[in-house]
Structure formats: C-alpha cells, structure tokens
Image (cartoon, rainbow, N blue to C red):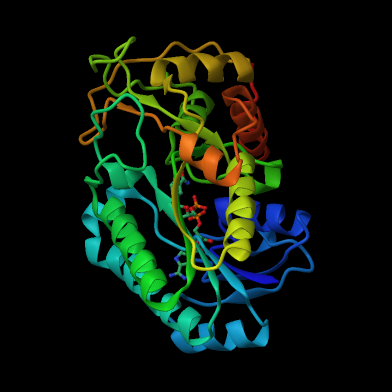
Length: 326
Ligand SMILES: NC(=O)c1ccc[n+]([C@@H]2O[C@H](COP(=O)([O-])OP(=O)(O)OC[C@H]3O[C@@H](n4cnc5c(N)ncnc54)[C@H](O)[C@@H]3O)[C@@H](O)[C@H]2O)c1
C-alpha cells in the first residue's frame, strides 16, 4: 500500500511521513514547498513538488506510484492571514481539496485522511468539546476546514471512498530537533520567541472565566498526532466505506499562565509574564473529549506537555542558539 502525503514537507506532515514509514507503509510526498522544507522528507521517500490545484500532475503521481491512500495535510493554516486573504485560503484549502478529490476518485484510490482542526468549533461553550458539539467557525481558516470536511464526507457518500476527518487541537513538540516547527504562530514557540528576546511572555488577557483568568487549551504532541494518522489509515484500509470524524487531543486543559510557568521551568528561564489585552476571537476554553478516537481507533496520547516543551525547545535552540542563555 502506498500513501500520498500532501503537505509532507510541512511540520506535521513530516512527522506523519516518519510515523507511516516506521510502521512499514510506503509513502510519497506531494508538496508545493510554499511553507514546507524539502530536507524534512527522509531519504528513500519520493518528493513531488506540485500544488494540489494541479489536477493533471496529481493524476500522474497517483498513477505512477500506484497510490492506494491519501493523507491530505497540505493547506494554509494562519487564522489572522485567513481574515486578510479569505479568497486565497478558500482557493488553497477548499479548491485545492476539491481538485485533489477529483483526481483521487478518478484514480479509484480507496482511502482518504483529511487534516481538520478544532477551529471548526469556533467558540464552544462547553467543558469538553465532543464531535457532536456544533461547528461554528470564527475565521475563514476554520470555515475552509469545515467546508473541507463536508466535501470529504459528501465524496465518500457518493463514491464509497473511505474517509477520516481528524480534528487536531493544539499541536506542539517534535520527534527530533530538525523536524521542529519553525514558525512562531502557536503559544509555545511564541513564548520561546519572547524569552529569546529577553522579553516577558504575554498572557493575552487574564480576565477570562477560567480558574486563573487566562485561556485554556488542549495540547497534543506531534508524535502522538502522527501515530493517530497511522491508526486512522489502517482503520480505513480495514473497513471500506468508513466515515470517521474524530477529535485529536489529550482531553486535558492547560492555561496560558500554566504553560508559561512550565516553559520557564523546562527551559531554565525565569521570566514572569505580562498581561496584554485579549486577542479578538480567542475562546476562553477549548478542550477536546478524546473518547471517540479511543473507542474507534484504540488510540490515546502518550506524551505530556513537558515532553512537548522539551522537544520543541531543542528544535528552537538549534535555530536560535542565543535562546539557551541562562
Ligand atoms: N499546526 C497546528 O497546530 C495545526 C492545528 C490544526 C490543524 N492543522 C492542519 O494540519 C495541516 C499541516 O499543518 P502544519 O502545521 O504542518 O503546517 P505547515 O505549513 O508546516 O505545512 C503545510 C504544508 O503544506 C504545503 N502546502 C500548502 N499549500 C499547498 C498546496 N496548495 N499544494 C501543495 N502543498 C501545499 C506547504 O508547503 C507545507 O509543506 C494543515 O492542514 C493545517 O491546517 C495544523
């Protein structure tokens, strides 16, 4: 069985390639390298540079590599940028997916795993977010993920394609320093970035209705997330016509204040945070119920938040040696 992994040169995609190949699956990476890094693709795994908007190239790759399953991670992922450039996000994330699904169904590829996001839920007013919590995305990015799920499920119903929509919560950590996230768009790298500049980490509001007043999120180690893709891919192969939608989180909330304390402790810094105004559209609490994925795939997270910080920090220090000051 050969899996086409779109976005396999990206942060999460490279971890999925690693987990799939370690599990004995064959992989081919398809990536336009817009944010991806070719060196992340391991030796022995073919890398085809191309866009998901290029249906002809996709058709050639699916045939040439006798692809029997797709894991589709290629997408633009910045919420703020999606507010400024909605047409670009809809084109890359929704039109790119539609073109890919056309090629996949024409080639009669039987299995399709789609990277979705907790952003589909928007501002859920519940303690634990289940897959049945209403989806009310707050940004064009979240909308493209929800529209993507609709597209994937509708195609599955119409053609018998086996599908899995995986709703990732907050992804962090790395399997090795070279595979670490190089952007500073998520909380952990944002705290690293402040510590590196000798500036206090920011709390973005401390008057939310949470125990310590700061926002609470569910963090998932990218290595655990990648293993969930292996489990989903195997489940689709074993049961044709399957239609699975699952949260991928740990079911445990960590507040921004707690995360800053943990980062200080793990990295040897000692920098108290500063309170800055709330960011528009930040929900108070978004924590997954991870029951469905445990029941459906027998998967559960193994790594804790300290593991995420430690491994992310090793990757950060590799690129920013000045950060390891204290
Ligand atoms: N990082 C997170 O916390 C998070 C959370 C929820 C969901 N996701 C989803 O996970 C997926 C991977 O995210 P990531 O963090 O690895 O981001 P990333 O930017 O590191 O990876 C995206 C990859 O896709 C490629 N790409 C983008 N548009 C493409 C296109 N049209 N055609 C071909 N290749 C294209 C990029 O070059 C890059 O290699 C995305 O779908 C994202 O929406 C990420």
